[in-house]
Amino acid sequence: MQYYSTRDQQKIRGLLASEAIEQGAAPDGGLYLPEEIPRLAGALEGATRIAELAAISLMPFFADDSLAAQLSDVTHEAFDFPVPLTRLEEQLHVLELFHGPTAAFKDFGARFLASCMQRSVLQKRRTVLVATSGDTGGAVASAFIDKPGIDVVILFPDGRVSPLQARQLTCWGANVRSFAVQGSFDDCQRLVKEAFANRDLAASLGLTSANSINVGRLLPQIVYYLLAAQKLGRPGERAPGFVVPSGNLGNVTACVLAKLMGAAIGPVILACNANQTVPEFFATGVLSVRESVATLASAMDVGDPSNLERLRQLFAGHENLQATISAVSASDEQIGTAIRDSNARWGRVWCPHTATALHALARLPAERLKEREWVLVATAHAAKFAEVVEPLIGARVALPAALEALLERPVEYQQLRPRLSDLASAIS
Ligand SMILES: *Cc1c(COP(=O)(O)O)cnc(C)c1O
Image (cartoon, rainbow, N blue to C red):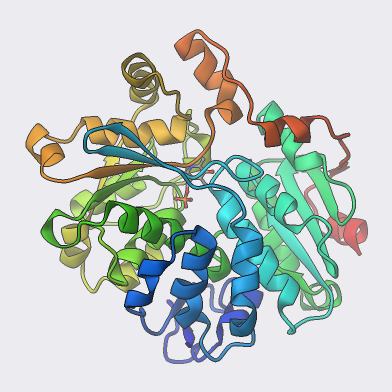
């Protein structure tokens, strides 16, 4: 399988999977996509465990690549936690993606990417540099800890991540170093871009990226959609609909890829917070990028979602896109109502991101709800956002054991001024 860039498709193409993964973003600023979308084969039916399903279904994406022979090892190492599909009501299910080590769905992509990079023969020594506003840094650190030959550098905005997220970003040691940057998330991202643009620095450290535009984080996210579609198994016109909490649109792009591969997936609804770029684009066809606004679903506070470029590439023309996907926005108040209502109705407590999906579902007309099964995608454990959720429901939310264990580790990080020269001397 060969990969091409969404931007300069004439010039940047013909990369194999591990080359696209190693590069992260394309040199023209575009995102890598596979030249073809492989169709699912009947062989999937026998695979019931997610690691097996992943090894079979992702194999065509690694055709001709040196990682193909090790793909089964990669998927068994990366997907070693449960992925329950639980039922709330007769035709309403929740795909729980928060049972990995850092209790958010970012674990799927980060763990798969780490296992691939560890086995890739393209570079001897590398430094994974990530800017994070919260969840990504923890998932990447947890996935890369103690991987031989790989250093991890995490930049986060000092004082602007939640207390639990701060612990998760700074409790690693070993090959993971964390820096509290005196500035905003945008400053962190700018530093990362400047570091990559400095060829000497990038080459001497073997800089590589683990952010969500890396195709090595996108591909593994396809698998849980295949799993859910297989379990609910109703292809054709009545295939289940999926509601996906969305920010940078990586998760929903994976859902769409699974559908294009032939999985039994019906309509796809994008659930957004008060950041209006995406809902407005789906309603009008006009893209107007803006500054992000802060909401209760903070991991989705994105004003300029990178993966929209991939979605537009996968569908020729806005009408085709609209025929499959729609988008709904939830205000903070509606997020709060959804969390309280779910607790009262089903005794289940969800994180603010998952609550945007509950809101989108509640907005569907009753006849649309009845015509098929629906799957809500749950992206993080509610305990990660206890300061939002607990006052709403008036009760404590217990931490999952994996998070509890992280909180017991000692914290270790350095302060950093947002200047490339400071970063370079700190990590060289
Ligand atoms: C990152 C994240 C999202 C948004 O996912 P995208 O792939 O960026 O659309 C939603 N919920 C949680 C909990 C996240 O961490």
